[in-house]
Length: 68
Image (cartoon, rainbow, N blue to C red; front, side):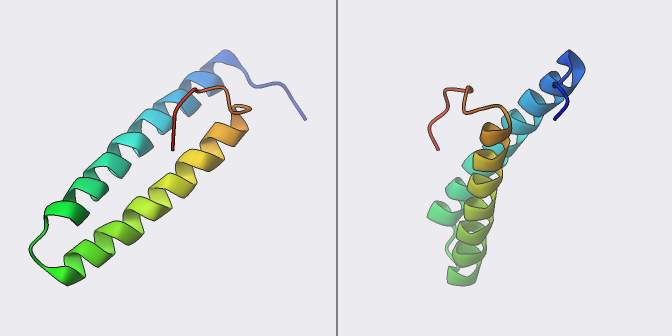
C-alpha cells in the first residue's frame, strides 16, 4: 500500500474534525428534540457518524487520540 502524503493526511484530519462536529450535533439534537421520530433519526445519524469516525481513525492507525 502506498504511503499517505501530507495533503492526504491533512484531508483525513479535516474529515475527522467535520465528522466529529456532526456527531456532536446529532447527539445534541437526539437529546433535546421534543419529537420521538426526530430523536430516533438523530440517534441513527450519530451512530453512523461514530462509525465513520472509527473508520477514519483506523486509516490513521488509531493515532488521533480521540475517544469515540
